[in-house]
Length: 160
Image (cartoon, rainbow, N blue to C red):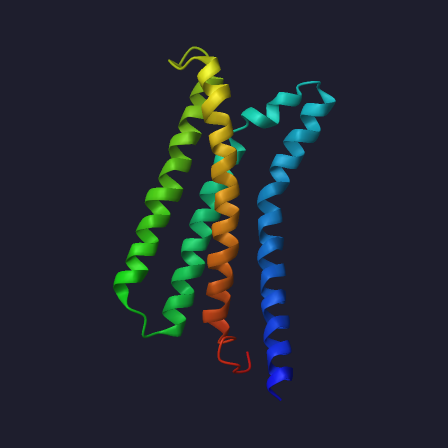
């Protein structure tokens, strides 16, 4: 019985992870479209300088805040201090840097309004927004999976 329950829990976690990955794929679709268009127009570097990386990060960090809050609220009995800390960290280390990068990317694409050198944008800002996007995916998948466990009681073996 214990082995069967363990297999069921693993299968439920796999299903939750697959659902979260599907949600992430919808954030990636605009980047794929931009890349395909840039290949057709011979501007292959357009996808590297696209602000959609930062927009995707903001969406993922915001969505995981909602999911995580719902999971903790559904579970009940959680200490408000750790929840507040996680939410503040998501805002301070996720959403705010993504917003700043978005501002810099959009400003660097507008030559007349930008006081940044193009070299600085290509060297630091564009790679930084891609790194933050990858971090957003990792945070979304990990906290999202934890939220799914909290929402559906899968950690206790109770039926969904």
